Length: 60
Image 1 (cartoon, rainbow, N blue to C red):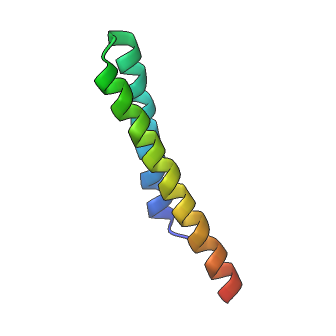
Image 2: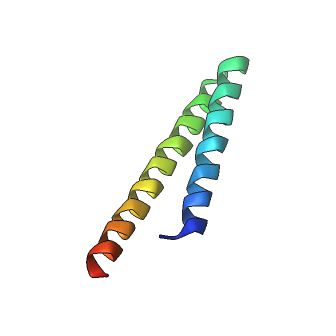
């Protein structure tokens, strides 16, 4: 498990949520969409880390 990679993914998720909220407040659909994309990217990164963790457990 890479704690650094998980922290980066969490930061990306927070950034995405903030950008999506800003897009909702200002009515900017581009900001909202970019924020949602960052959140999706974060989910993928967390999934990759989960797979790495599972593989490592099986190898140990």
